[in-house]
Length: 220
Image 1: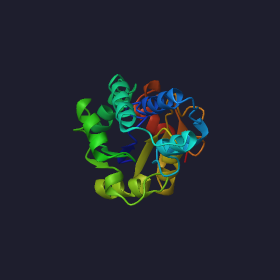
Image 2: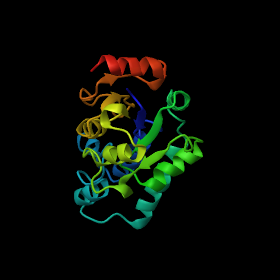
Image 3: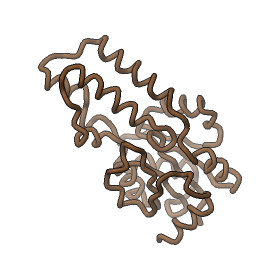
Image 4: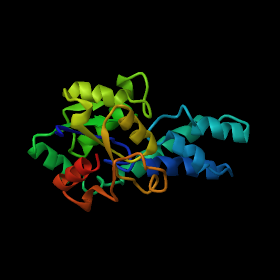
């Protein structure tokens, strides 16, 4: 029996991933360097440990980036993220889950300040009983720590929860924690290998939550 839904945040609730990539790509272009997508995707759903865009660019150009360039990149990221709407179907699925009595959590490799701030701004913080972010665990995705922490917080077992993810790192984390997983890619992750998920949707707006849960149950 499914008792909980656990959402990723970046790229799943709000498309922050495209803006973050664009803000760095613009810095790279200003220095005459291409930002390699095949390296960038290592960070999606995870952290900069596998690929750090600032350090990589500094190695390519042979000098440190001025602080004003770093600050402007952050400002540009904020500008682009604030222009993004809540992704399609998210609000309906959250409302439906609450109406069905399902418990709701977020498992994110980003900071708690980032996740809770945007959820509050979007009017979507209250329905979630649990947020677990990089501040709360030793290892972020693709390790299972975040999902295990949310399961513990919500008081449900892995086979009673469904994760909703947009990236290979997120899917791997959910599956390592023993959850069933739905993949809902965004434009940045649509071409990546999401075959580890139990169900793949083009958008959360493709159907109702009841239909999605039926698909998940039928996939196992």
